[in-house]
Image (cartoon, rainbow, N blue to C red; front, top):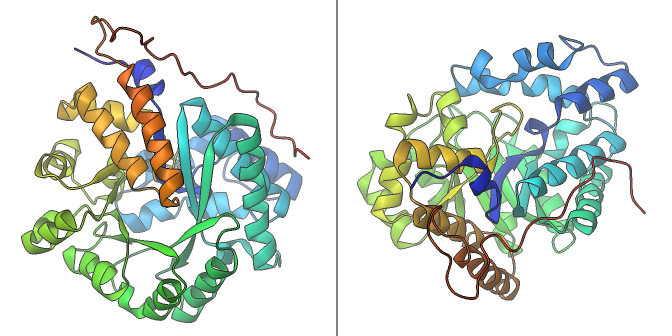
Length: 371
């Protein structure tokens, strides 16, 4: 039976790979730019979208990353960071994302002299306000950048350790892969592992499986961001499968960056059918112009994912979350019960269940700072 986007939006979901600076609202960028006297390439939403939407401007990862110059220009104050985090969590809650992990690199938000601790606190406070209002759960992932120095990544790792159990759940290594190997940032990952902090790494997006091997074996990554080229090394693929190393798959983004030629050639259906733990994510909600629901709908349309397949992928997302085991176990049980109430359109739900009975609340649009 054909599923609709509206149906998928009702399902509880995760978004484990979502960049704060790639997921702003267009209107927010324009308003922040006006407040901060920042010059933008356009002064209306339609014009601005043409400059930031990767489908218009990107043919490679390097071109894809250029759009961040626009978004980062307005994310240099505590108020802007708070608002961006709050609105991102609100947007996720609207499509019934129950658990969101937001990632960003604090070092990229210091153009106006903000202290690193203030940058982290602003995002955490914005997310906590959204949690109180919308019932969503969130975590923060701080990123080192491959094109920056190993010392800069070490500073980001130190921040992770300092904010462990205070809203930060993991460390990540992001940025252009080519000529910037993960092993150069090994000291940062070692600090993370020495302090029992979770870690993930962008790998196999713009470089081959060697990049994924470095992330796993040199850096100890617990998850892999993208992993699009893992299929090129069968032994490594089996290792990731056997050790249940989750892949943070972002199909639309992978096509825009050139990691996959087109939807038909993306390895996601092979990974899923082979038994790898795959999770579906957005990467950048604005720059890619997507939501988790849209990505799952794409899987249904182009790969023939059934409702049962989608449920399995959703559960894989919750299993892969950087949450304490007991909290995660309770959340998975709750989500499984809710997913059981959803059946293929045109069929009858199980006795005693009401399809979609647990609905997200009605959300307001205010992004004002809450007490």
